[in-house]
Image 1 (spheres, rainbow, N blue to C red):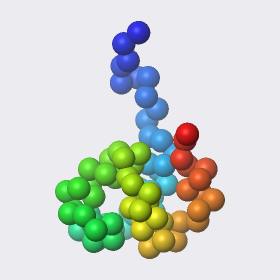
Image 2: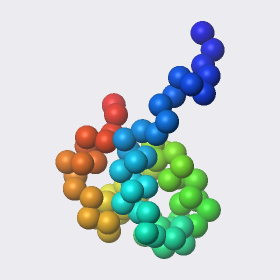
Image 3: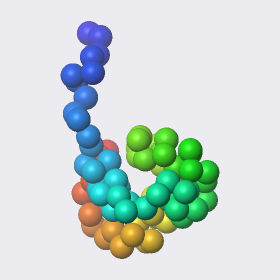
Length: 76
């Protein structure tokens, strides 16, 4: 059966967690944290499932996100 935009939840738990933690940062600052350009940082934050473990670790450590919160937000 074909998928539609209605099959996908509005936002994943990971999206909400990371965008909430980085809400006060500009994309330039976020890009500097993860070691990417501002455009790449913006694209990665739109689809946080595409972030690497290294990038997730950098964001969480810099913003004080607990590992337990991150584990709960990631869907296997």
